[in-house]
Image 1 (tube, rainbow, N blue to C red):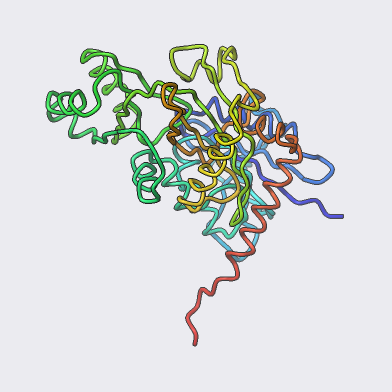
Image 2: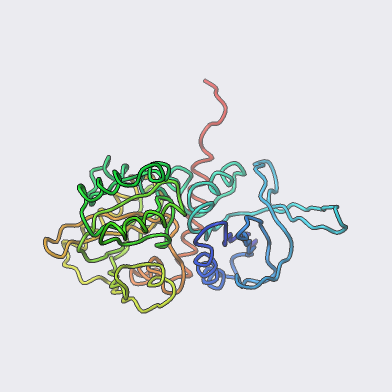
Length: 365
């Protein structure tokens, strides 16, 4: 039986480059080598694409440079080799499905998805629009509001506005949200560039930091709540995993707590009563449908400690896949182990692609 050729793309020109390498390393080891011919494609920090000769993402063992052509008519994975100085030779090969393991900009934000749509290659995960909305916290929150999903108070500012006049922005934040607040780049994940500010001096530093990573900044009210996460899997009929709870080792679930220290406590399943467990799972599916998600997403919530109110925090359309990441752990606890989860994601990618290709692209009556 012919193996499906699966291109696993990772790395990328993003502040989450290292996270992507760690996630992809776990994915590459777990994919069934009997079912799939695996093509590891690493994108450098500068944005160059390489096919590796091993399945270890941290190796620099490069087989050749690579590119995907926006050509839906034939083999569109290109191998580029310089056999003589200044002379590039290339060969083309087929790819049955792409498994992006890219976090952050140029991978999770719809840009890669747009290229794969032009090339007509099936790919795991959300489409162009859902990826873009899911990546942009300001757009995401506006979409959630449109669908009446409960969420905390927030404000959005442009970097140009901040650089022009800081004091009115600080005044507005203090009046509308008070302290402490969380300051986040709108288009980044894995807690990169996020700060908690308890006074104006810390707010100014936090805004400067967030502006290094994006032209748009989201400032959120502090919510004294438990951090709950739910994994969603599916296309038009998505399902939610059981919920898990994160007890951060740091003041909040920052980059170090997620990927370096490994000492944050993950409670799976979350210690919730049946009513609350069912409600967060229902809201997770609603959030997924609100952005027209596909394949996978992780939906994060706060449950207020004083009132028990459930508030949605964000949706992550390409969640971490490291050994300590919540998404695969939640599905394993729900009854779908890591390797079978990857199988299902590839099945969903092909299913979604086949459904999309039913659409007419030429007008006729």
